[in-house]
Amino acid sequence: MYSHEQIIENFTNIIIAPLAGYTILPFRILLRKLGFKGLFFNEMINPYEIKKARFNKLVFGEKDDPIGIQLFGGYGEGIYKNAIEKIREFYEFNLVDLNMGCPVKKVTHAGGGVELLRNFSEVHKILEEIRSTWKGSLSIKTRIGFNVEEISQTIEKLKTLKHYDLDFITIHFRTVTEGFTTPPHYDLYKVFKKELDTFIFYNGGMNTPEDIEKIKNEIKPDGIMLARGILGNPLLFKGEHMGLNEKLIFAKELVKLHKKYYGEQSLADTRKFMVYLFKGEVYSKSIREKCFAANTLDEYLSALESPYL
Image (cartoon, rainbow, N blue to C red):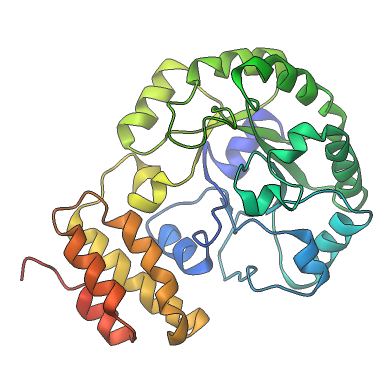
C-alpha cells in the first residue's frame, strides 16, 4: 500500500477515469503526447468477458504507464481471480480498481457499479478474491449513496473495507439518483475524508480548468479524477483550454491511430469523440455532419480540415 506521498509520486494528483468506448489506446497515446504522465484507466472490463476470452478492450501500447484496469460486475466465485490472472498473462498494469459507482444499466444489470452499494456483502467477497491473487495497488470507485438520505450509510460501509489495503478511494460526489448533471456535493469531501481517513480522489463536475481550480482552492482534495470533461478538452489535465485548430489536429491524429489499431472499417466509432470534442465550437455542427458522413480515413481527414479555409 502506498503512502500519501507515494501515490502522488506513482500516479500523480490528477488521474483519468475509465470511460467505456473512450479511454482506448489511441486516445491514451495522444494524451501522453500532450504530456499526461499520470494514472490512466483502460475501458472498464467485465471479468465475465475475460472468462470468455474477450480481450478486445485490452489494447495496450508502449509507454502506456501507469495504467489501471477497472473491473465491474457482480460476484461469482473465481471470476475476478480468473480475470486478473488471465489479463496478467498478456498485459502489464499498475493497479486494479473495482467499480462501485457506475449507474449505467449495462453495468448495473451485470450486478456491478452502484448495485454493489446495495449488495455490499458481494464487495467483501470480490475484494477478498482480488487480494488472493493481486498484491499490488488496489482501489475502488463509488458514489456518495443512492440518495442524500443514505450518505451516512455509505460512509459506514466504506469504513469496513480498510483491511483490504486500498491505496485510495475515488468518490463521485453525486448520488445515484442525481446521475451526471446535478451539481456535485463537493462540500461533502471533507466529511468523507475525515470519516474514512484515507487518500481520496475527488470526481464529479470537472469540465473546465476553472472547475478544477475551484475544487483545488475550496476543498483541497488529495487528488482529482477527470472523466468526461477530458473528452471535450484534452488539455484539461494541464488546466488549459484547447483551441479549435488544436482540436482539429487532435481529431485527425485520433482517426489515424484508430485505423492503425482497429482498422478503417471501425472509424465510425470515432464519431462519438467528435461530439464531445467540438461541442460548443462555432463550427461544431458542420464538423459533426461531415464526420458522420465520412467512411474512409481520407474522408475523415477532409472533414477535419480547418473550417476557416
